[in-house]
Image (cartoon, helix red, strand yellow):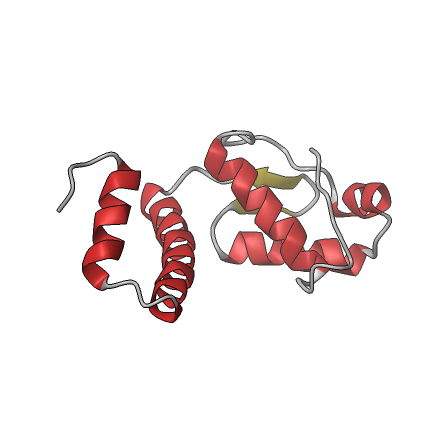
Length: 126
């Protein structure tokens, strides 16, 4: 598993780890039932505290992406399609909110923005 962390992002390290593992699960890079590295091993590989990896794994488990079994390890949970869809919708909503703010600052009308979105999505112009 290739996790890249950066101290410059402003995003907490545990959140960077959790976000990248979520992305791997959603994309199919990590399959249902696949074992994740132990918290200690991941901490050693990333040269960070075990407490940080523990917090990332706890967040992933709380959100239903992984299942941890005492003495056995942490595994990718069965895909809950509604959960994955909700995560994707939240991501899209954040991007669209940025696009709307940019459009407003640029005096682009809602109709122009809708037309652009329709073109980008591959549909017909509104």
